[in-house]
Every structure is written in structure tokens, then in C-alpha cells.
Length: 148
Image (cartoon, rainbow, N blue to C red; front, side, top):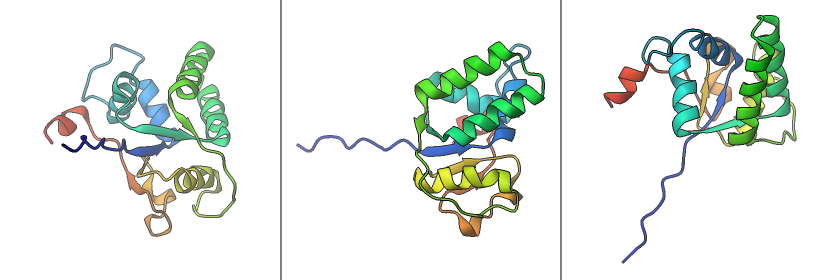
């Protein structure tokens, strides 16, 4: 009898705009289906349904943008610690100009070097699909994922 093959978890890079939108979804009581980015963060935190990939440059951007948007320092710290604990770091060995927005190159490179299946973003135009192996997608609302 052959052992069951384990299905590899999908690997993904999460753009800062998804993090910002997701964290804003937790200001009040979390309601599934209301904010797709919050659904994505919640599902990942609860179920780790994908492998979140990050680089030090990405974490620095998360921190900088959240701080600029006046997110409470304790919440920023808790979020960054959660990512460091549960996500997979990607050591970056190259540089490239992939995105029309130079600030998004670190996400593109992390996705390529981390062998990501997806890049979650709310701004697909900054992630040229033709230059990336990972599929560029938006977070889906909780209800549409349950129907699959």
C-alpha cells in the first residue's frame, strides 16, 4: 500500500496594501466576508492555509507603512512577530527591476526566489504577470472561498 502523498501548501507573498486593508478589518469585530483582505489574514492566522513568504525588506515596508498610517505600535509589533513566527523567510540573492513601482520589486523578487504560487495584491498593475512566475491575484471574500 502506497503512503498518502501530502499536498504541498501553496506559497504566497502578500503585498502591503493587503496587509493594510486586512488589519483595518480588525478595528471592530471581525465579520467574515466583509473585507476580503481581513478574511485572508484571518484564515492564515487561524489555519495557515498557505505559506506566507517574506523578506526583511518586505517586513520593513509593512512596519513603515503601518506606522505612517498611525496603526498602534503594539498591533504593528504583534503582526510582525506573528509573521516572523509562522511565515517563511526568503533570503534574497538578486536584484531586478520588475515592477513599474520600484517599491514593489522586493515583493516580486521574494516571490520568484521563494517559489511563490501567488502574489496577493490589491494593485495588480504593479505586478506584471508576464514577468512573474507567481500568479497575481486579489484576496477572495470568505464566502466565495467556501463555495469552491
